Image (cartoon, rainbow, N blue to C red; front, side):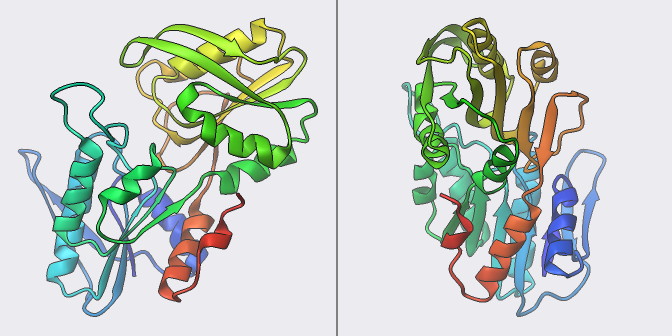
Length: 305
């Protein structure tokens, strides 16, 4: 049985369509002070329950998921599987300076204490977050829908680029798949969400460049990289990322940048208007992962690379 929180219902409906089942009946009652309560409107006793909810801001989305898990546990569901296309707080995966929290570990602990039996997610900001859980984690990759789309463009003189050194492993996977060169951007930050300086490492002159990232928040890094590459003689510059956070001035920056297009998956809903933004659905990929979990089959061949 598949249920959805408020924020990710659009994706849960597509997943159910792909699975050939109906979306379960779940009631979320909101009170005037902002508190809310969750209740299942049909029996889930002894059933395998899949709860679809991305935990992007605000924190109500995470709290909804926690209450859904707790309610399912108390309603005697056989297994409780959290389907989290976008795992929020993932950027807080380590102590990068003194006296800070490790938010990703805290969220993992909250889900475990609530009673989750399995987590199905996609493109974690850092792979090691899987180790924060004491339950199985099925980690899917947005490349499963992004790579076929890029292949369909038939771009010649292709170059894959990473907007920072930290994303080089991810970008290198794409470069190996397409058999093309890899270009890196070396950046320094003035503070969070603000890029101070950036330099291109590699040749982009006359090339069709595709920048690969896991998420785009304010789009400051990705648009600055695109503008630099265009100025360095790139023929075209595109960007692909799994998670469409796109907060603050992001849409305006993308629209006014040198980017030909900005490609995301639909792990996070995007309601703002930007002609350059294109979203690819991951519903079929998650539906197939759910089907294989139910049938106790391997999901490893879902990965293109």
